[in-house]
Length: 330
Ligand code: KDO
Figure 1 (cartoon, rainbow, N blue to C red):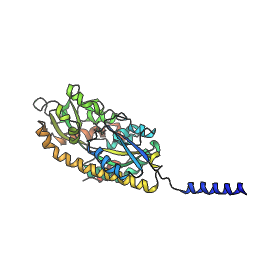
Figure 2 (figure 1 turned 90 degrees about the vertical axis):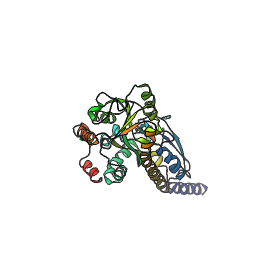
Figure 3 (figure 1 turned 180 degrees about the vertical axis):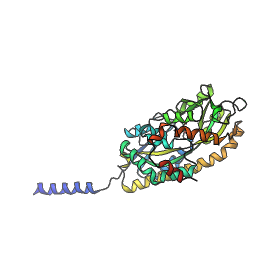
Figure 4 (figure 1 turned 120 degrees about the vertical axis):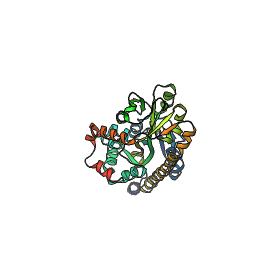
């Protein structure tokens, strides 16, 4: 009798436990990024995302690549060393070449277009591949901004009008194939380098320039060690909020919905802040002494687009996706 009572109770306990949805009580979300704590994306994560998940998760950010080297964050999520990052399409393209479509110059037209592309069903297959093959969920898209050419040389020494003017210019680009290709497509001589090393490289002259959106030029103080910005807007750049599937699966359905909303809200807040900064910072940078001007953007667009279309990258682009992306734009 006793035995049978105990085993019934045990069976009941077990079946109740199995029927209960997963519910994390305190999940630690370690997030690593090359960005600083004053970057609009990391501010939004700390001020919008973190409080919105605080009842079941502790957000633990690591800035300036202090935990994981730039470009290794996805691997770190997959191996359980961190739970979150803001990952570039270029990093994803290293695992899944089809992501190179989002690394190509002049494909995304603006922040709204970028968002429409991310939320369109065309992204489903991309997201699913990352989730099943890397155990990483792409929750939202964060707008980094329009990348511009930021050079040490002043325009009296080097004025940029067309890609031909960048011949021989040592342009720092982040360190993967798709970034290097973009640097070459712009007409420059690309040099791979981690973000955290760029300031010193500009200061010492080991590179002639770098490309980043205006808010990054200001946040990283590149204006202190450069003289001009040519507004090529060659890449409407993004980072995805990348999240560990293993951590996600520990959450209840409600917690997952809460975390998804927190990520979306943070991305919206960061996008608005970044757009506003892009507007405002032109005059700030001029006050700091930089010359800012528009080169022949049509010439850059033509050269960059044809470099991509003539390259092997297009072979990995799923059929019809470029057309769908274009159709979501203006
Ligand atoms: C950079 O290294 O230039 C870059 O802008 C690349 C982006 O994908 C992203 O990693 C960014 O750096 C960092 O978040 C720092 O802003």
